[in-house]
Image (cartoon, rainbow, N blue to C red; front, side, top):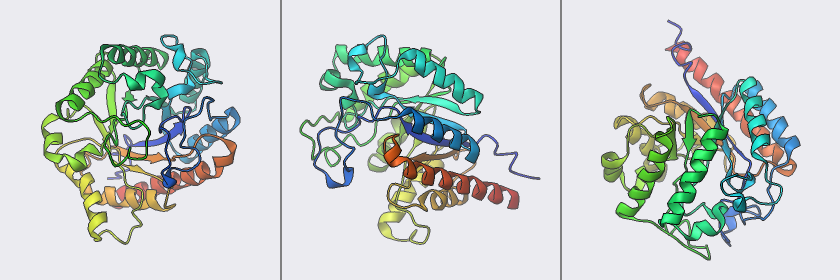
Length: 322
């Protein structure tokens, strides 16, 4: 039997940044010149349009949109940066994507490591005001997207090592992290939408993760350095074991690759996942490009999309040979 048809359900996702305020003031050299929050959005429409066309051409079927400060929300317009899109413009773009065969998925990252886009509310974490603002935004975005299949709520890197260069550090721990996480997931699921998160918490708190993480949540752990020949290196093996761990414990996942540091990462990670994860667990791949959607960075995106094209071909060949 031709198994390509069996896996026509695979998600080939691409992360595109409408909003890019995800890091606080930071002197960490690896973050680069775009890491500081800006009072203006960093997304030009011409580059956005060109990348959407390329996504449709290479086989991307899911577009995860980092919204953040780049939308003038009706519920909280005070969050918007200069140049933010109106909700009407965003709706038009969503409709355009669907006509192109692209499934638009909203993303708002509520991790305290990546929530500077919330403005003053990022300093009100775990208060009644915070819960109200998060709920308002989630519900408004679900309405704008006309009840999307998924809602990516981020929740990654909420620890000291990833915030050590920040001027303002917030870390929820233990039951408080899970309380706020559950609040966000429940808010999404009450609207008939499935929550999607980054999965790095499975690495550091594996037993707790198994006990408390709902199987309804779609998980994206990530690895950006895998070159395809160093799988037995202890540090590499530990990171790759996280994908195996999620698979063995019955979590559905869309692993994240990137050309952020290695251009061949996406194909190598796709090959690893095809060979090591169960078909039930493996739901697809997620290409993440940590550069804004501007002309200056377009080459990064085009290279990443070519990596997706090659990864899709790799998966087709794999299932054909099974």
